[in-house]
Image 1: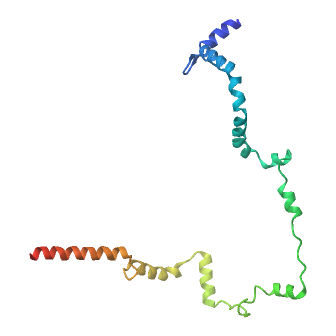
Image 2 (image 1 turned 60 degrees about the horizontal axis):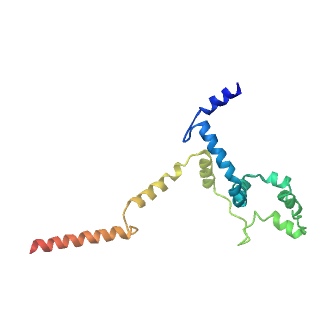
Image 3 (image 1 turned 90 degrees about the horizontal axis):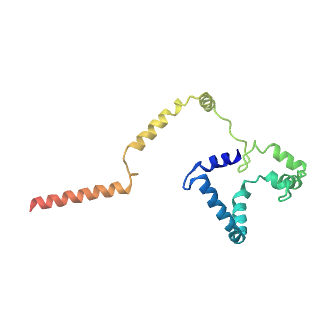
Length: 171
């Protein structure tokens, strides 16, 4: 019975070799010659495998086998303590957000109009900016002194060509 199974398996088609029997005999012949090649390639194969596999190993596993120190433990040990502050420093911190550091003055309070505009913006109404957007569009569309130099060069080239054509027509 087992020989019938082996015969049937040997007839299974295998790409390149034709049948499984031919593929198995080829593999056996190559396996006999492998020890002579394996000794020279064992170290490079191990390095290559480590090159691709080591980045896939998680830090937790590396810590558990002792290959890496626990960075969370190092961070907890290196956590600085809070500095001791005197009363003047605490008072300065308490009013730091209320006083402008450069001038020493309190910040100006927003006007009623600014508060209304802020309420519009918070509600999602940006219609107050439409006139600014319109003015910007007009400036952006109108050609002026902000044109690229390339456009000016093209205009000059066209004028020179027209002058040359006029000179040719005159002759």
